[in-house]
Image 1 (cartoon, rainbow over the protein chains, first blue to last red):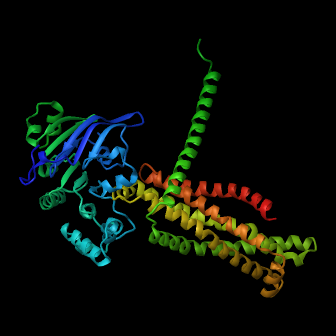
Image 2 (tube, rainbow over the protein chains, first blue to last red):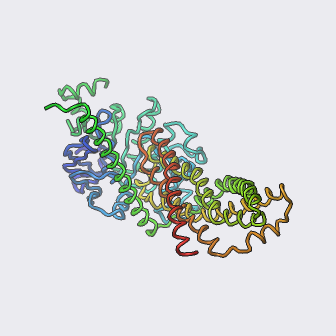
Image 3 (cartoon, rainbow over the protein chains, first blue to last red):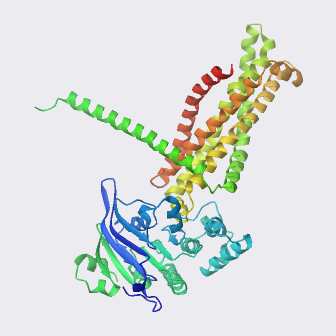
Length: 255
Length: 269
């Protein structure tokens, strides 16, 4: 399991994310079929695949927003499928989630959005909390827009704020759901750079769900390609490029 | 042996009725589970006091003008229509009592509930529906914040506590405008109107009907939050959540009123 950062030794630690034989259906539609994956400490895994193949569902299962039909999901060593809500919330505090459309709270300002998790889960004073929010917004280049509402921001700016909010509780793990979807190539590259910079600074374990091959190549240590609810191939991006599988060749066609 | 056309039609009709009944009971089952989760959240910390105050203020300030207007209109209409009938029966002196009894016992509470249902239920259904379809509720859960504590319990409690206060506003404007409408036809002092109207009013005539609006508030809050939290399918889902919130909340209010009026008569007459 290669890692970009030499300081991180994944073998000595329990993998922060370990999924085993996970299955999930919605009614008659089978979304995930007994999939397994492991993400090492400080590693970034990108899950690639066509739209509607269950990539986002996988992320929501990892954070306990959906219940699996079978299988186990261990986050920081705890099986989230077997936890009470209180225990699950403790696990969630250590996991940041960037949603596809950023999912910022419409009625709150940017500042309030980023401060929302802090207000509930930290012991910071009002001034300390405001400073932390300012720092987080500065780290994603959004400090000047602190008093705006989400509706006043572009898609890329919303993603930046979503990322700042995801980082508010200083998580160990970050989950990205299509971080570059709907963005122009320049903004998408800026988001990729931001993800890379944060990974370098904070050494976080990340799972990136995307169908953007360029983004996956830029931010990942390892990639896994999904097809029909299963992983077709897993390895480095170079491994994917070497594959002769027609679907892999077709998927990478543009790269 | 092939089925006749009539038999096929009959099977289809039975199938459609079966599906409808299944959905009907499924809806009530889901609502019961939702209420159970709400009840647990309402008594489990953290208590979102700030959000509750915000919702209480929002609901009150936005519904107040409408409730006052509806109460005033009810007072005028009641006075005009009752006055004509009472004159015919030679009982004109009973007008203040009839108007005031009618407003505080039934018109004020039900009009308030229906107006708030139209105003707040649609708002809550649409707001939570939009939050649901844009993953804001998922984001809240992912931030380890229980959306039932933060979004649902606060709104339901705000509805329950605000309804009786708004009912007092509707009662006040109804009685005031009832007097004004009567005075336009035949001048009478406000003091005399109030005195004649409230002469035989007891707390049992006033308190139970006013407090029954707590149940109306509960219905508005629960149904609109339930519809919003279960919205699916983009903007159409939000629209459905808003419309269903108003329609179902109004319907349940009217049905609950039948039951509550009967209970009040049994226990407080």
